[in-house]
Image: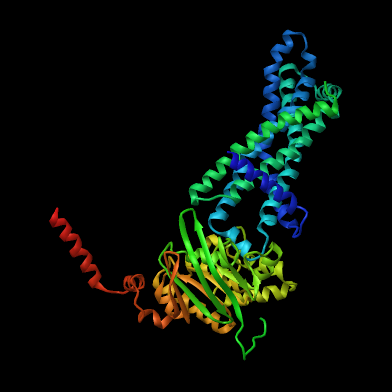
Length: 248
Length: 272
């Protein structure tokens, strides 16, 4: 475990050094951003709508009991924007992306493709690692913003069906209840979650060994370690948000 | 292709006293060899004799525990990434499975290297790629993905990628392993043709004797991490050494060996 943490720290250091050094693989970065972002759109949409809808369905009876039905859209919006959407989407996307990166780079390692790039002086670290980590850091915040809207849409559908709430009333109630501190930090922290997802996936794949069995282990470890680190990092992120934005 | 000096033969690779161990397993022990421009050396030995490790040390993919490797006098073992990359543009490396980048077509595999290391225009690159593929008889596979190629085709495409930068030295890691004798023969023929046409030096790691006899001038035999033979290929059959004899006999098409094994098995069965 300690060996893995140390290895991951050195690998991250190598990333920060390589990210400012040529060659800049712009074409590959665009391709990877598409892979991480666009290909996660469907999955994120389903998860986000369900989060919004379920949270609204779960909280309605209690809120009604306390005579606070009018606060449902605001409460859901704050919960979704501050916490649920960034963290759940990051963990779900990590499941898809980190495993994919771990397996892809792991296979490239065991079939000597990474060695072949090294021997051909193609800087595989810049081509494979830097592009994938940056792609995660770009795509995840965008997916989070997209998920924020869809989760609120999910909540609106429930409110509309259960209470006959109009779209404009839902919108106005939400907008009155939220401020930048509810939305901004939630999106910003996903840049770091994206980094975690990308660097863990790349580290596991890039250092994969032990043939096909090793590739499987890389993919599994990539998901487990990145999800765990995202959740741990969230604690720190919440603490920093409270400190800098004075949210209450 | 760099100009060749016809009067003096330049030393390309010098391996001096290289040792490498993985834990208690001493894979290489004090190995030295040198390759001149245009020469072909075959490194023979059983599986696990340290042949591939030697190749990876020469190309800088692994660091030796002791000893040094130089390319045209420049050290590889202690080179910076930049220096190493510069040296590597003069080398081609054919991996066992071809190691084609499987997210790219065959043509893109070659183009990626040309784009990274040359200032050639699109048309010039295309011409060079077609020429390289033509040399390995794969010009019709330009737009194919590696997954649709057979084992032999993958090796040939890998070879085309190794020669696309017109290197001075090509390293081959088991170029014929896993291929049927006919395809293996055609790969050996191809390697020899490339050497003759492009005048490149080659280091070939193999345990395939017919290939070694076809393509190389000199041979080195490794056993237990040590060099047990270093000399002309022809000398392999006249030199006597226990491991060398065992190695050469194992490759013979000889039915008497089969009978010996069956007799031995029958005897031990009767004893029980």
